[in-house]
Length: 364
Image (cartoon, rainbow, N blue to C red; front, top):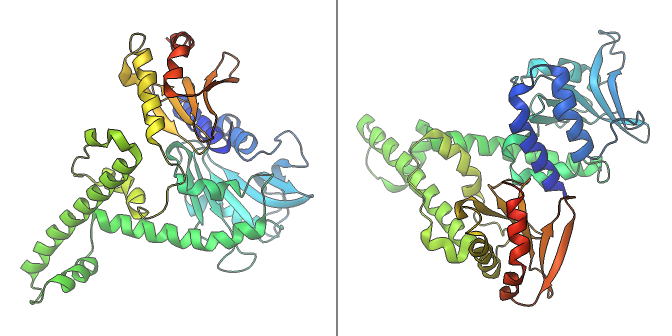
């Protein structure tokens, strides 16, 4: 599996098992150690890479422990403090990290509850851990913008200078996005006045301000709707005529989609082609007598176009490899190994109908 797939697999595991995790130790074993091993690539059973219950004398707190220390070339690089799954992460929970940061060589500190990971460094003052994280990752709701930054922290790619260089921008971009999100949900007076002064020449009386408050909120929501529709039409190509985005009328919807709306001018890293959508429709046509077509979904990646049952990574129906001159239909067997079948045209997919139906049947 590639990096994003490993992250998604852990995400699904947390969603499935989270309700049964009630202690910090269970959180470490079920979620945090798999994150360190499967996602970041560290050998959690090798003390030269991962040291549990790491101890360093801090002067004021002798013998105090941090849950994990990640090492490279015998030097501590990352300190990790763990809390129970579901517990809110606050600055008060990072007291050991603050103390240890100044007495070790670590430049990165992580505070986590197994689902949310807050990454800290020392941007504000050398050898003193910042009070605000430069990156916050929620594995149950993965922000794909953060995935490349997380990859920089993996064992094979770890480059502290690169991480620190990116940390400053990440920190402030995150803060600005948070402010924008708040303004989109509940615009403040100064925010409203900014727009009103651009379009209204009269005096901003209390009544006028209230009117512009309502108009600003409505304009922002319509702006988001328009941009999301544009992105959906671009991504779904031929299926876009059937896509309708309802008016946003609650805070949650606004905060969820704002990240997508803010980067509409960025060139997408994953481009879904018309041919892939046609292939997807052929797969649905083949399987319609075996499963309800509403259960058949797709997820496009940079390396292949995945077709899933129930939008579940554990239920892959097939993969379309259409990015090279030679096209392949990839089918995963019981051993999770993919067998690629070369195809010269989309119609060739029909010759593998029996195999596709057999794959779909094994999940029900």
